[in-house]
Image 1 (spheres, one colour):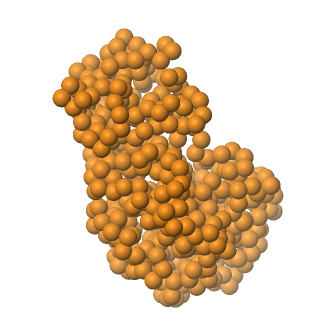
Image 2 (tube, each protein chain N blue to C red):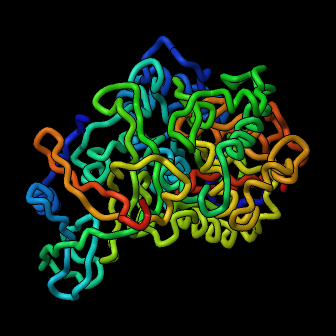
Image 3 (tube, one colour):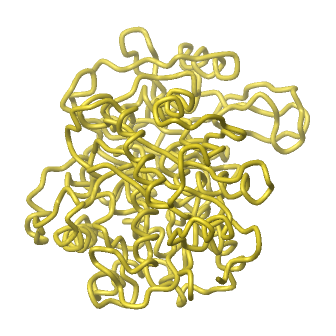
Length: 132
Length: 383
């Protein structure tokens, strides 16, 4: 499957650079010890400009999902888009791989995997063993 | 006259036909709607000194005033975002009038979003970083983007796509008797809805999506006194506002704790009712922005017309259709009349309060027009 790659800038480059190294990174405020996603240049809780990235354990829960398909390239093949609540507390949009659409996907547990799409590594997710 | 002294009112409405192929420029559509609205209000172009449109509108203010003969603008502003800001155009215009920055403000929105630059097509990542967190994962159209929240709503309250179809059937019933509607004389059954193809399975079918349209809409906002002096059949702006929240996003509204609750709408609704001194039960007609049918369900709940998770039964029980307790989108809405970014719903609200709507609701006095993140409560002139 071909994808449309991200066009990243100062505030979110760390995420995609981390993904390329197969690490799921979350922005972390070095001052007040909170995490946030999507990234922002300033901590909305304390106003700090000091930020770092922590590595997520890559486990979370599916909040919601859809089947994405579109008759035009590059997204002709159906894939499942999910919104994941990571155990660290942030949320991100991703894909669920190796699974079929089912009502039981809501609230199912997932774990991250990294898939290379023509040079862009996307952090995607699989159902964890018990939820498969 | 019930409006406070100096208070802004909507004095004029105008629009082109709503079509799939206008065959003329968007600037001409904007100009035609403007001329119609000024004529309706009884204003000459030389009496307009302010303009408001959408940030997304491609018609430059100066090109428009040169086209229609408005000699000068003292005030010019644009709203943020897309259709969610439809009623924020009224907010900006009213603020300009009430603060004395302008005497008469023209609001316009015109596009050929079917025959030229089509809406709803897959996008590429843009300088707005929000797209980075969606497009690479296949989330590249408004239908998909909104569906990710709609699915949680369906999950939480046990809805299926057939429930959404019951809204579309009502909208198409209203449209069937509105000569301005693109679906005039073309009502559907629930079976027709269920036979339309999936756009986002298992959430949206084709008939859950608004109607890509060509067309233009214009409004004239001025003071009640000035409107009276021109003999305009104005309607009162009882309350108007917008609401944006820290964890929100116009499209990617994924970061509120509760995904199946439209918090922007709920907070906006509470403010509008308080300012107007009204309650949901006082609303005679509701014009509810619907890019996609499920957002009507979320707004019926957020604006207090029914409880959480109750919109399905509220619609199935006939409340929003002919003879119902709360007629909704009596022009056929954006699914049935046309999608002019929500602005045609404001026009219908004005018509209901003037008593000139195609599907006139008897003695309508209060109309809520909501675009979710912006809203207006309009009042009849002699309510």
